[in-house]
Image 1 (cartoon, one colour):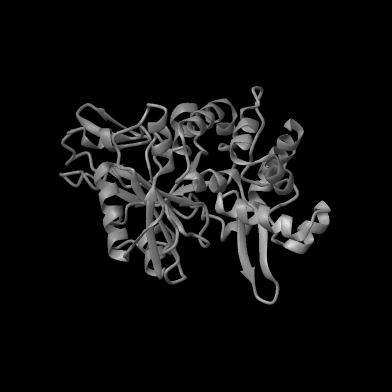
Image 2 (tube, rainbow, N blue to C red):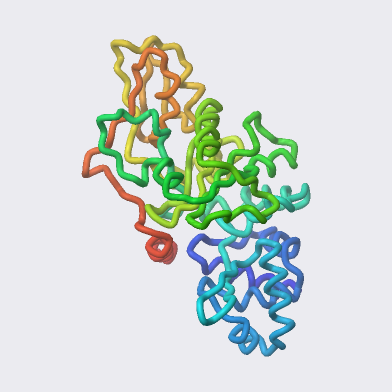
Length: 353
């Protein structure tokens, strides 16, 4: 049994996102919680490339009806991906642990799984979150950017929402997981946004509540009020979700807050600047900053750009207007990878180093 789960863990770790092993073997306990032996054996024969039932059956020397049943079961459990290809039919592939398998346990997560995940985060998984390019990137709060600045489309959440035809919201699994182990924070639970170019994409998904674009924008506004950082996958295209994150619960941001990894999340194209002549030293921005980039020195706010990720949270509650977001110069700008494929290529090369 252990060898089967070890093989699956190795296949998951081959995916650029990573699934590193630990001394305790807690990553195997997680897989045993999610996959039956039969499912794990079959899943370990998959990779990121989509395959037909016929191909998977031949590779595993199994009957097609048996393979189909196992594959559909794993799709329903959020363990693998399925899509329909014209002229071929349904095809299947393995998906990363994060972002992927873990997030799809939203409706099924229990205390045991939450405790296993916490142990894994603390023991080993945070290490792979330090690899460049980062899994997630910060999207600045849109109203924190001056109207006279020419903003790249990937820096605006509204770009993705405007281009979608379906919108949905679901519980933040990070905050659900933390609450299950008794370490929950005060922030709202239902504020992870998903969207799709396909109409009615979320109508039949139990753990996603279908909403309008206007409701999605309201959720982003509420997240700003709560002091939550907008983030999404680290690509300019292939974006279909926006998380609203906090360092107290977010699996990505905790890598930075707890383990000091500045690569845990990619920065936006901006950083905060302070007009010291009008700063009142009220300290509201200090409480708002998730990255500990601000401090009050001699009665005025100072920004440490080493720790500023350009989220804009400090800007939106600065009553005096002393804090603004300044766009980086061309030498400082590092655009995100074009799409998921480019991200995987760069990530794989970085992990090999």
